[in-house]
Length: 69
Image (cartoon, rainbow, N blue to C red; front, side, top):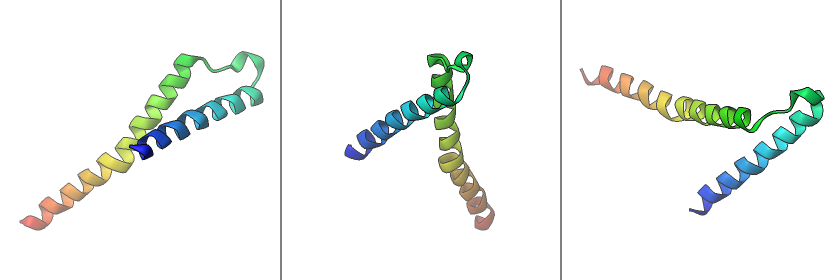
């Protein structure tokens, strides 16, 4: 449970710092809205799950079925 809380805390702090850095580097009219940040975070989480959890499972399942027959 502590690991989940630590991961969440690290993601929140990291996201806030990245938003701050992007706002400092960009022009005044290029500030990120909360909706844009939420979409970016959700897309990143889904992409991470797909690449590091679903894809290896699917590839492993494919090769497992091929070797059984």
